Image 1 (cartoon, rainbow, N blue to C red):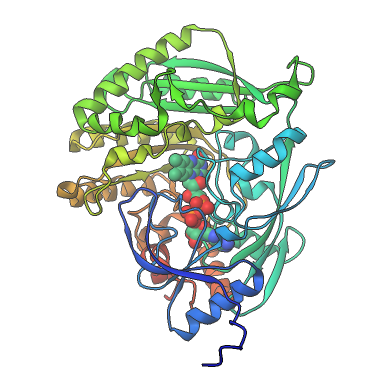
Image 2: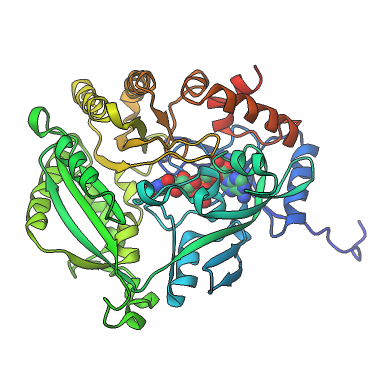
Length: 486
Ligand SMILES: Cc1cc2nc3c(=O)[nH]c(=O)nc-3n(C[C@H](O)[C@H](O)[C@H](O)COP(=O)(O)OP(=O)(O)OC[C@H]3O[C@@H](n4cnc5c(N)ncnc54)[C@H](O)[C@@H]3O)c2cc1C
């Protein structure tokens, strides 16, 4: 060995356990962490040389297998995390792919801007968010993150780097957004953000007795509200099926906040370290763990519903953008309430998107079947959506219901069977699924709910951008490979 020779520059590499956020799927893999476009290309070369496939990964916040591998390498882009530029005149951010939503809002909020679209957690990267085409509580009003994207660079397994926008490489632009890392690796992303005149939003709680009431409220307010989200207690049936609590929020107009300089600070946004001034929030999952069974969750949901009724009687209140948007981050590692031991733990989220005309009946039937099967979701979140132009999009002019199911190893097969039945119901009703949340949909389902012309065009682009099928993760094999290769 020549000790004077310079070490070959290359991506950092390690061997790690890689799992879906819901902890119901995972395995060990070699993880590569590039710091530049050149190193992304080097990762492609390393995988090819080892005859391994490659799965792209951001923050690992997809519930299922979207960023998990079968037996290949993982390319984790989290080390490419610089904010390259922010144009404060137009609110346009140029970002490396591994910038998290947290880093983005912390950079732009003091300048009076907020991301147009955020997920319920601030930990995803912008690349992971764009690859999933995430939606927020304002999907009905502003669309998905793809709608806020101006341009990106995509590094293809062929070695080419293509700049894509609505004007340039428009096909690839619309195909890669929402393509779950199957076409290439985002290396630069340009996003529009929105001007805000306060660090707070005004929030109104509205308790609703069933799903019909919830949907009627959304429909009556969607033209004037900026954000609408419904929490649902999935346990009760008959007239109370789908009862819950809506949070209806709006941005403040210029001049409404008497001290925007104070509310736009990061400090104002930070969530308190203790809950009710007592429990360190880092330990709350341990308490939730004690209630992580049907009886416990039935009680917690019922208590939350009663608290929601009281909130519904109260006037609107101010809440920080971060507090309102990222409520789930308030309890760190809350998923550990579902168990921490490998193979004995986890949750799946199942999120069907159903067209408006049939949404009430289909979602009500979903809840009824869950109850009959004795597999009631411990958390249900209801949202209103609108269609978008991205090829593999999950969004419809309709409603989604995100349902968190505990994965009890002894009843896993039963749960998958229930989900298969629900999937049949949803697809027959013209619905769709969202792969960021999914672990159950099969390739034949994908081919039924996505339009055939889009799928054929996507398969053509896959062959052009990735002719050797280097980019092949667990999700690709489960839900795409069969029809792409057909
Ligand atoms: C608590 C919680 C709440 C959530 N709330 C919402 C919500 O409200 N709305 C919503 O839409 N989603 C929501 N999500 C889902 C989450 O936003 C998505 O799964 C998102 O994709 C996660 O981003 P990530 O950086 O963690 O990516 P990962 O999960 O690591 O990867 C996601 C996908 O991106 C691909 N990818 C990663 N990097 C690149 C790259 N550089 N180029 C191309 N492809 C790449 C991966 O291959 C994978 O297919 C939530 C998730 C959690 C855990």
